[in-house]
Length: 269
Image 1 (cartoon, rainbow, N blue to C red):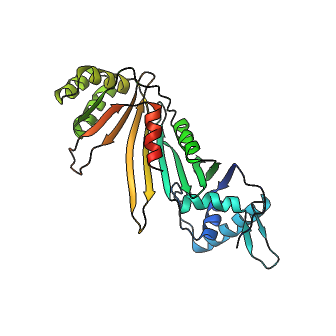
Image 2: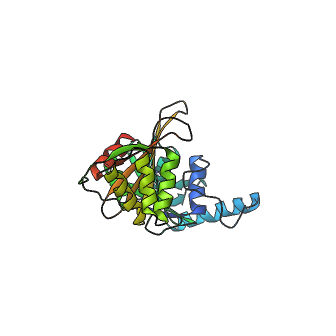
Image 3: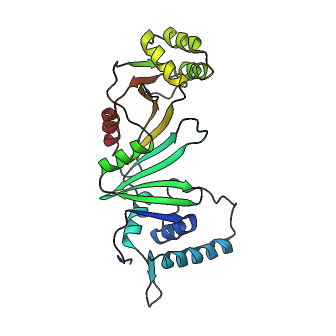
C-alpha cells in the first residue's frame, strides 16, 4: 500500500484535481466542501486525463512517488489528512459570514482516531488541509475562523421565541425599524432588556456563524447538532432550534461566552 515518504506536513494545499487523485487512492467519492467543477462537467476522457495530470503534479511536489513496479504511492500524512475528511468519526462544519459578507466562508473540521484536520477553501479550485494536534486545537481553530471572542456576558439572557417571529423581528431590525422588532419580541414574552439587546446586535451588522457537529454512531447513524452564533462588539448570542419539526417550533436564544461555546463543540467531538 502507501508508505511514508516525507515528514508529516502541518499544512498542504491541493488543487481540485489533486484532491480527486487522492480520493481515488482512498476509494472515496467526495468530502464535505468538494464542489462541482466550476467550468462545468467533464467527459470521462477529460476526467481520466485530469487524473493523470494531477498525479504528475503530486509527484513533482514530492507528495507522491512512483515505485519501480508502477505503483503510485502517496505520502502517508497526506492520506491521513484527506482520509480524516473522507471517513470522519466526528466533524464540525462552520459557515461564517464576516461583517457585510453576502456568502459564507466555509471550514470543515474532521476527527478520525488521532488525526485532526481543518479543511478550508481559499479559492473555488483550491483546498487547504491543516493538520492539528488535538480536538481542542480544532475547536480553537474554528472559533478563530468564526472571529468569535466572547467574555462572560455582563447580563445573561435566555429565552425562546416562535421561529417566524424571530425571523420577522430580525428583518425589522436590519431594515432599521428597531421599535417594531423589539415590540414583536416583547409580544412573545421576551423580557424588555433582552429584546432591546438582541435588536441592537442585529442592527449592528453582526458577524454570523452557523456551526454543525456530526458524530458517526455506527450503522450509518449520525448524531447531529446545529446552532448559530451572532456577535457584535458588545454581545454574543447562541441560537438553536428547540426539539420539534413544526414550522413554528420556537428557537432558543441565549447570551453565550467563549467557554460555553467551547464546551458545546467539545461535546460534539
